[in-house]
Length: 119
Length: 108
Picture 1 (cartoon, rainbow over the protein chains, first blue to last red):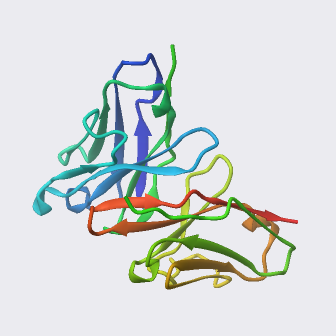
Picture 2: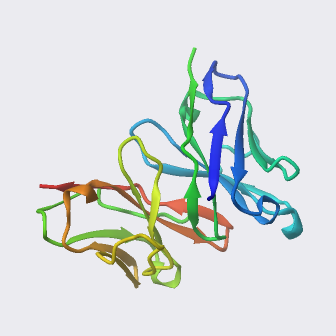
């Protein structure tokens, strides 16, 4: 059974940093392209970014609002995906989901972790 | 970046057919995927590659895509179908993913 379990959310002040983790199981994580999607309270879904498998180059892509501030990384030995968020803004307040699936769409979503950026 | 446009809301009576549209420039040339999200839950994939259904999704859910509009059709609507629905594409030119703004389906 595929499981994606996010952790690390919480309350942080504007300008602060936070690192989210996503523990994956039930599939071959090292071969997976993994993504993060967020959802602000009462709003729609917004793609944050993606990391390819190391065999496919391990490269990352980011949405414009987070590029230069957020970094996606992975530890294949721990089956864990990370999202390092720096220079956080109030508009980054959202539930952050870890996703796995195909290149073009996502079969599996975690339950999400809430990040609140507020003074 | 590629823009997807959905109506904010659609209402339908139980047993009727709901159609949720997703507009985009020449969207018919892309593969469109649809997600259902109920309150307090993570989204669930209900249609992928325009019209295919993941295992476990009822055949009441179907999709089509042509020209500038993709459509998610829910036949014989039930109260349990009340949810937010999002369309999504992968833009190969930018290698980015785009979601529509979402449509709230209300079952009257």
